[in-house]
Image 1 (cartoon, rainbow, N blue to C red):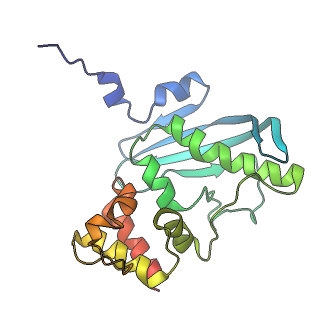
Image 2 (image 1 turned 120 degrees about the horizontal axis):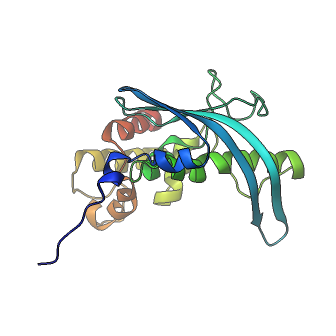
Image 3 (image 1 turned 135 degrees about the vertical axis):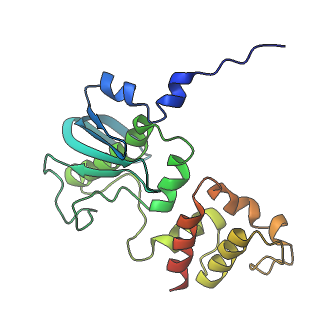
Length: 215
């Protein structure tokens, strides 16, 4: 039988802190949290049919706080004060990187902070810079007021709040009855596969989103 080798380092360093240290980030770690500070430099472009968005040699100093105990996303703060308070920030100055459920879906599958920076923080800064330089950005974003429904419309193809909330509720209860979309099919043979892309998201996070949809 072939021996299966396990990379112990990858288990011990699930946040990929070694990679961040090699890139010059400062890391402080306690039993409760990890604090990462350092510079993120943008040299990125995005090509569309009409324009090439190009941002070069712009740096942002950031602080990332990761809780080891709580079931929450990393909190990101921009220390260089280049991002105004009016641009996607919470009241505590934490950056709003995108719709939380979308971030959870990806982050909970791989908690590498290197990937978190590439997937969420750099796109946040890139979009801000594009708006500043070009007056518009290459991609849209979910609204603060109706982001939950907009996100579920993308994954389910449904924009009726009561149907979306019913589908999410069935998913949380793990029931296989008629699908709320009224297709005549059972839930497991209809919208289950589409909503199952959220399988990596903690159930308490999904319940919070269900409450938002039911308001």
